[in-house]
Length: 207
Length: 393
Image (tube, rainbow over all chains, first blue to last red; front, side):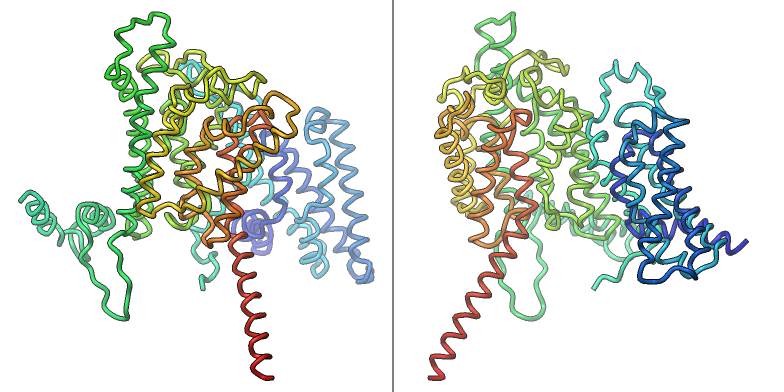
């Protein structure tokens, strides 16, 4: 249980891949203008990290170290194509909205990072949990960012109107800056700011 | 005698705010008000220090004084634009007092919102971090209402001020640590967040005293972006009787402020001059190409339209965000002027190129300084090498 907690819960907070390791930022900018694509993207990345960690960990003793990156890429690419086909079959709208970003999961730094740093030196079950945790940590940030961007930028959540019409009649306007990618960076920055203020031990020494 | 009684009052309540007093947690706030009223009497204890009568607070107040002519003219112009565009115009309403009073009542809430929101955030941060309250916001809070359209809703203004102070300044550690001009951050925030309220023909002239409705009226920049020659004459634009952001239309009023800043040595003449040079040369270059109406506009029109003059005098020269080295200032200013004109002419979707040009160069100012200093070091190293070789012979 403690192992489970360490591997799955910690990446949600103190070793979060986005806010602490600052990985996977590019897709964080691209898919968070609305909540729905962010949820789907988060789920896809979680599946890919968990399964690729598991598979590479099984193979880890047979992979020659010089060609390990190629082997990892083959595994990840195969999984991503599966996910892509799955989305096209069952969630075509979202798949179109995400467009190239599903394919670009292959280049997501979190996946390669976990393979290199964890799966190559741990057992399959642990690696699976680690991949799951990091995928969930990534999804968490994605969902938080997308929540604020969709709510303030479009006045909707998951496509449903949330801010009542009477607000707009009283002079309220949607914030166009929220739709633009820079705002995702600023929101991630604010999350990092809040996290570090609450956990001073995470701040680097200021010399 | 009055000042003495204030001094006495401050001395009387001071113990409450020092370490161990009842209101010790409000120390930063107290100190801010004390140094606002009196020059601090603390002296340095060791080493030798150069002290100047002009500290940050006095410099900032000088900038505010330099802004006053533009502010007064802006107030008058708000009323003037309103009355000449209103359908039910009566001639007697056009008196200076009437126009000024209308503009004054429009500007007052904007100034109040800007200062209340900005200062409360500033004081909160100073208090949390146990810093002294810095004076930077005195100028920022004064400038922000001057560079937005008169019909900007107050809640949007409040949001922009909050964004500028928190994201533009406090995250980096407060006044002196920010790399972007906070007033421009506020304007850019409004421009991208609420584009319909920040550009177009329907925001520049107030329709009535309290609402956010507007009378249609295009600015010269707006007309040019649409491909028509400005209807206003160069003289009108120079005096400033044109629609535009509240207080940046009058080149004369801005020039008055610029004179004060240059005489007192607070703003850098190198930056002002090089911005004008850069903008002029880029304008001449476009004149030479003259492929469309916008490129054929005489180069000096760029000085008179939009926020060019205001930006060159009050924003490009912001000592915190500008380049620090003298050569760096020339490069920095020249590129601001050139980019501002280039953005206006090449990309009419962003009518106000000055704002984006200054922010862009704010980002590059540290790099420019770094290169200038590195070059200086290399030159000196070469020189010492040459002299040491010569003396060896």
